[in-house]
Image 1 (spheres, rainbow, N blue to C red):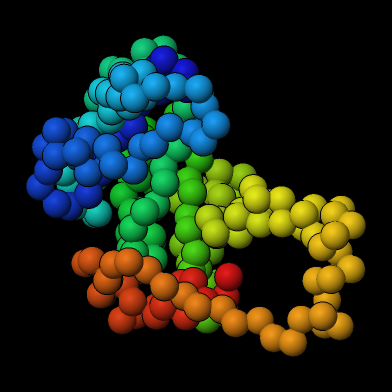
Image 2: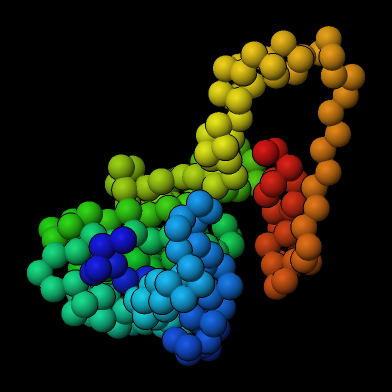
Amino acid sequence: LPEELRVYGFARSAKTDAAFRTTMRPMLKPTEGLDMDAAAADAARDAFLKRCVYRQGAYDSVDAMRRLATEMTRAEGDSGNRLFYFAIPPSVFAAVSKTIAEAEGAMTTEARGWTRVVVEKPFGRDSASSSELSAQLAACFEEEQVYRIDHYLGKEMVQSTLALRFANRVFEPLWSNAHISNVQITFKEPFGTKGRGGYFDKFGIVRDVLQN
């Protein structure tokens, strides 16, 4: 990663930088197959976490967003690219987009570098609400700045599942309806909603993951 990379966590909850890093630490693991001992892995993890900070603010607080922008600009210097990853309930996508747009002079950096917004599915509850969300995003950002993603759909590509089946002479003739009577899919997670109850009440687990 570039040395100048910085990660800013921004949410309503009160949290220190240390607490933010403690939350992230267990999720940072060495890449499989990488020749790195435990000491080197810990050093790399610590070096990355030093770049991560947390700032508290309401979703609709333009003042809080401008304070964050000032800090980011100070760290960037003369130029910098900014990527906003919306790890938030879809119900507040529009509010956060509007907050960023109202702080436009401070938060968007097209004159100094690119600005991108990453929005995770579900994109609304139905066709009408999806179109409404797209219109709300379009009022705040150019279409080329917005990336709509489903992080899970990259799994097949990463694991080369299609290549494993169709380029493998052992599996290709066997993985078909002639040899497989049924496929059973079990969705399991080792944790509960963990504070996501409001999100699931409105959008539901089916819209969130079952389509995958």
